[in-house]
Image (cartoon, rainbow, N blue to C red; front, side, top):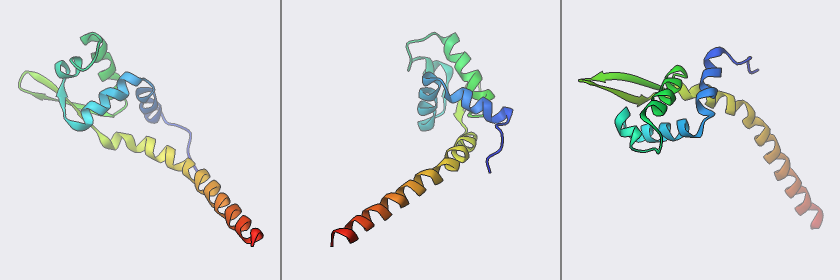
Length: 113
């Protein structure tokens, strides 16, 4: 049974709710990057990208580490575990429907013989 969402999971879903943040995650899924590299990927200000990064960090979807004078942003795939568990909870509904469809098709084939 799925539990009520915790504040941690609420932060994850809040972070994923915005398309720009999802795009940032896509960029970070291929390579960790400083904010300057991320800013170059979007038509928004550095301050706006920084706000998105803060929300992603609050959702534990990214981490930031210092490398020299730069702060490097890195995808934290374990942060997506909350989302995966939530989606997987509902996958049984698809499994049930697919099983029902298979049964209906098999019954239709049997009846048409």
